[in-house]
Length: 188
Image 1 (tube, rainbow, N blue to C red):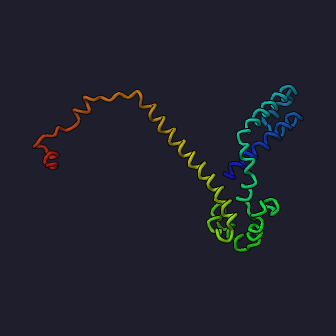
Image 2: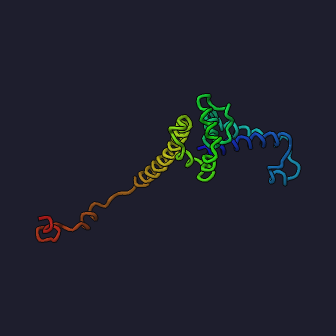
Image 3: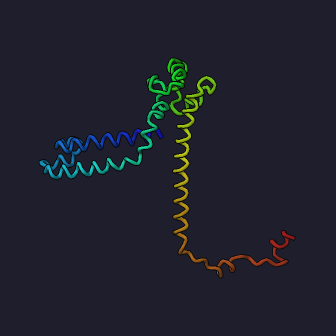
């Protein structure tokens, strides 16, 4: 989820940069447009407006902005400024950042696996914070799986609406059970 948020942030920054550059007539990131030679300022303004509209579409990610400090703590616990976290977590973060072995473990296994090695007794606040972020991650993964499964089931249901079973053929294909058939004998 932190990687998704990073991608959203990068996209917003790129759109802002592109809008400013288009407005200024700088086409460095628009090679096809640049290859046309002279582009009318009116057209550049229209393109910048389209990019501005795209940028405004990112409002749906505003909830993530509030979680950004938590994402940073989760993904880079050894680089977070101590005074930027909640006061009740600062001493734990100092202990974590000064722990050479923990830092090496983080490098060896990476995030989020690192948090599995974090002592809940020694780092209760950090452990709890990481558990909340992982719960968000797990919910989003589960939600995407449920959505995919739901979509597949819906498509299967819709595509089967026109199927008409041939009852007569199904009945004729079934063996008739009577007392002398091997199936009937097995039942008795």
